[in-house]
Image 1 (spheres, helix red, strand yellow):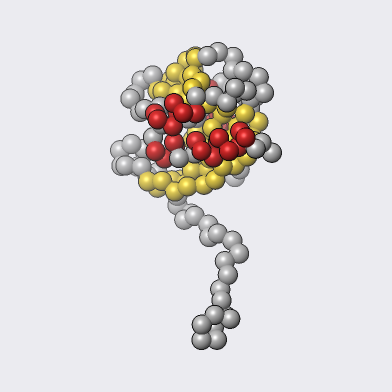
Image 2: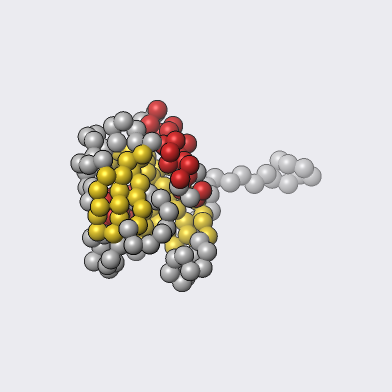
Length: 168
């Protein structure tokens, strides 16, 4: 009981996100030395990013993050270490397609047990619904990534550090 004889309400689970929020899966892929995979778009100035994209209807966030990694980098041999968390984000109108400004990001730490095939490489997205997205991919330290990623992406670097120290 709490206060004047009223029962105390206890939350047993978090409420779900608004159903109209665009759901995205974001990949924080590390190699055996703890470096992070990042990319820049070759055709537009959109800053340094990590692979990620929309979750299809009926697709789990875990399946989506592996699919997005393969589509945007060509790497299909990563394993999910853990889900780092979820966060709400609102992109500025014009930076994303209309109607997708409000987003929920599902962030995952992924790993490779072997080094990447290259230190840096270019890749054209393989999703049949998207054409013309070309990426320049490379590995960088977590410290460097924390400095160059957008704040909504850089906020996951500390959880990646913890995940690297305490793998499941």
